[in-house]
Image 1: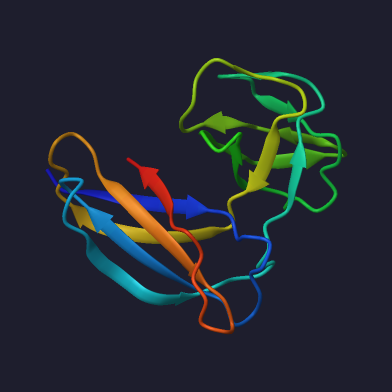
Image 2: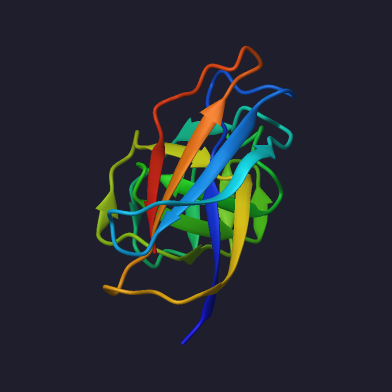
Length: 153
């Protein structure tokens, strides 16, 4: 059965208006298919990030940050690089209307939270081996690439 997958990630510290991302997919964890050779970065380029002001547990509908000033009014974020959450509102330093798309357990106060403002929509995917792997590589203005980030669906 074909499904649609939206992959989300945050822009690294050296991202700017001339940054691009190469997006690749693997259905068997061996062979990689290039989906987007040079997807343009989007603003704010470098992802807003901060830390949890209090612990957050899987399923919480609010998340408290030490400073949410730079975060969007709604969006997606990675907690500790492993839990993808979506929020629909923001009140001072609290993300509200939180929906958990991955992760489990409890995340300690001080854990890193990075807004995942970059995305790629992959349509009509036919997963095999019960997983789809994505490899995202950032390239800066000088053509230097970063180590890739890996995401699993």
